[in-house]
Length: 489
Image 1 (cartoon, rainbow, N blue to C red):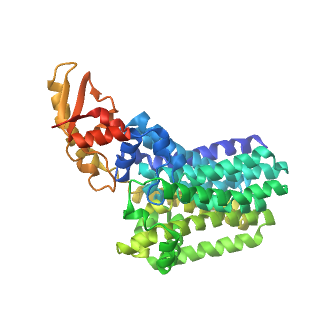
Image 2: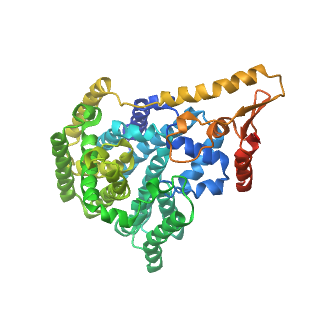
Image 3: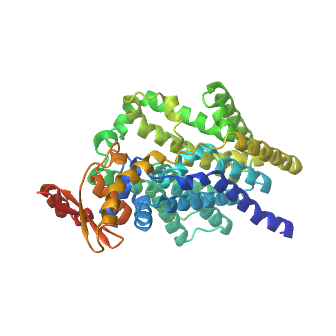
């Protein structure tokens, strides 16, 4: 490899990752929102195993919850730490996406284009600006790692036992990072069979059994471990519910694909045509034409890789539609409105970006200068779009101010108390979490999230007065929050 090519191989993904980080840097100022309060409280209140197995809204989060438990115990309510980790993971995903595209045959310029189009898409803001959606970012990292691992085995020409162990482990991590990860687990045998080297019969059997085992794990955890959400959402996430709402599921799945594909094309201009269904349909159709034309020009291996990547993206959209349609239909969301929910798109659009990037690479083969000029043009247009239409990132300042207001009287009492004193306050409702569908133990739970279970602050201790029955129940469950409670009667 020439020196210039080596420099581009390093500089280009770093620049694209830097651009993606800069676009979403405002997320560093975001605060906890909705589900975050539940997760923060449960992670602080429970042991790592107890929190890790906790399902939520149809998801089984073994891996994501383990990561989140560590983050909660590291940062509490200091949310900049969470979002620094999330943005770092997103930048890593952009680099890995560029690497996958290059490894799969895309020219440097087009690999940069596809990585930049996905990595800076405003559609990703709904995931990158919300701690509860961390699992989708982690899922993308695991999936990209799996693609690279299978490609490495293909290049070696042999499947080693440790390769199989790694692939199965990555499929497990994917399926327990976010519900969409079941699409990765389900398509693992196809990915390995089509895109990897020939596998011995025992290896093939293990790979084909992996989706069955992971699906069984999903249902076992869901059916045996109580969910904090309760029946509000969980009861609607089932095969029977999805079949009962099949028309809504189909329409929502189509709308999700159209909205996601068109958003990749529109970039920062997406808000300008947010409700222009015709424009989005034309762009999505055009993306499909590019994909089909590219597939026709690819060799067999590239075609298989592209089909698998797109299938994972479409499968993830199908899971979203099947899992959310019954509930959304009940609350009178239209399928089109549901499809515009940004947090449904981070991982699925990654699969679409890989497919479209490889398709463009196949169509542009032999037209290097034209492709380079197209990339430069896109960058200029995207720069103008970013200046005019930066992503709208909700930093949840209402929740932050309400939290500070709830803590202010306690802080005032602590400041007035002598060193070493114990301050007892009534455990009232915690306003920012009143709308969330789980128990957060009021103001005591918020204090637990912020300062831990020892209840000390500046050398003084805080205790929350609760009914004796509530205290005894918390002690009986082994809840850590019991250490912050005293009986008020």
